[in-house]
Length: 375
Image 1 (cartoon, rainbow, N blue to C red):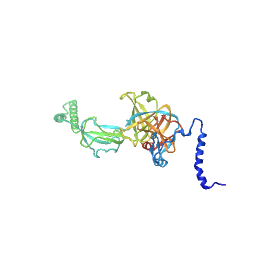
Image 2 (cartoon, one colour; image 1 turned 90 degrees about the vertical axis):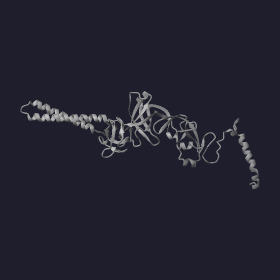
Image 3 (tube, rainbow, N blue to C red; image 1 turned 180 degrees about the vertical axis):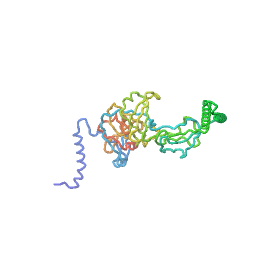
Image 4 (tube, rainbow, N blue to C red; image 1 turned 135 degrees about the vertical axis):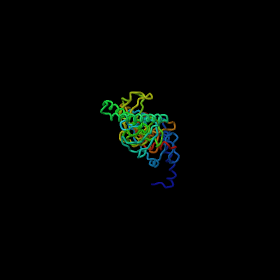
């Protein structure tokens, strides 16, 4: 027969107390279930940094930040070396335009070429009128006057000898003709030097990468006025401080920033030290539209040696307040724990975690920078 409802309400506290006592009685000897550490206490249901350094991030916030995770898998990865490089000219498809003599720049009929203009090999870019001092100009003018006077005397002598051709030797007439011809050529050379101008022409087909001149500018000898590059053929030069690295390169990548990664092909290494380093040259593969001449690049040179590590996107590694490299490991559905790690670059977009991370752990690979900012 069922107990009355008022009696059930009266006995409910006693039943709960009896259940707790029974739980304590069945605990293992020397072990109390109340000794287990309690989970970190959260304040509210919003994103927050907990006392132990972990981050509480609710599911709705995870979706807003577009967090993505990846299970860490350990394996053999190629050892990579990070070098500092820059974009340089390809000597076979570009060149520099320099003035041979100091002088004043004059624009051609079509005007001076603008930056980015496509030019063809041999196209006229500018003219340079050599700078001549008044003393030099006066000396050339006086020399021209002397040559004109000597030419007049030689021409009159030749005319007389031709009138007496029947009575004079042929060799005398030939000698007079040679003198007239020589004086005319010397006078023409002096005239050309007085009005001479140097033509600056494109050494290769490409586009104008730099233009350091305006009309009327006075330039010095050997000054670089234009640089012509072929955008489809650029090279990257990097400095290696380990000479044996040149013989161990298997591949390379270049990075000028997020979204500006390029594939590089190793061309060769120098045999002479420059700034106590060996220059390495790489050819840019797959287009160079995002690169500019002399642009600095971070070059990741992959060697034939290998190291055990977990490959992850470079965006998964962030810095903590102590400037340590860390990754965020997903400990539970809404809790993420920072993990200090040691990294080794793999290419322009990936790194290898060589210490601090175990295989099978779930790592944040997208949105780690936003997660790292939660306070």
